[in-house]
Image 1 (cartoon, rainbow, N blue to C red):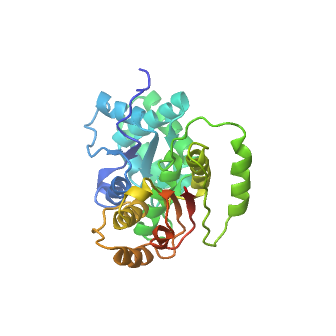
Image 2: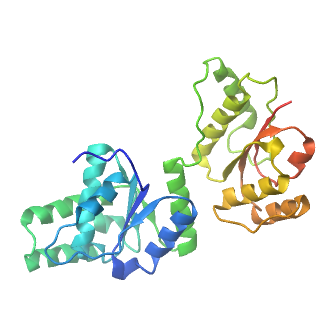
Image 3: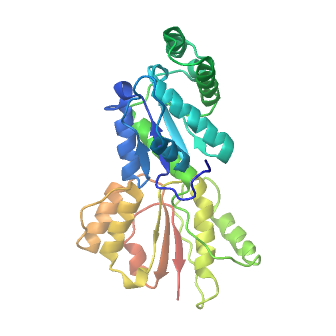
Length: 312
């Protein structure tokens, strides 16, 4: 079967129900949905002797990234192991990504099938319900996934850990990248000059205005720079049609866009300024504003690193 060209999902979440269904899997799934990531999670367990169905295989093939939550009991589930084999096949055949989450499990246990993973494999062998080929496929998949760079819970809280996973996924999926039209090579010089002004790893608040007559490529230039800066940041927002939209609405869009959640309505500019400072405090933000025509519009923003496109 060929890889589907149309994708309903971006992330496939694989986990062993008794270990994490009401725990890490639930934390992570709901965080993905709030961040606007289309995620598939399978809540079923595989009946003894059965294969995973075509719908589940299709969901794995559709997803850009598969996330197996490798808990202590993950390898005890034939269902999870069959999913893992399918993930590895998709990675090798179509370049799909696998981002393992090591949940209270050392990557070396998964890689070498030691500890609870070795016990689970031996149990499958002793029960003699699956062929030697199937067992070898499971072990090979575990070794390949265990060797991948993933996320480890270690001593951190689940909230902090979940935020890190979602942040990593957003960067991998490049969800915030803006589409740009083809541009002339001559624009490269302008891009380089502005990137030099912005600098690397800056902690300062910077406002950069791009202005000129219509049709000279201001939007394209600003968008290219915006996309370049997204590689190491997920706190970014593009507010378009600035001059024709009420400021309090834009303020609400800014907060919702950065926090990835629906916020209470903002009724006036002063309330919006206070809310931005309170909700986005200490965050480094990349903000692209399109069609700014008055300085008062910039005064209604919060603090953070900014990329401003200004038209006159």
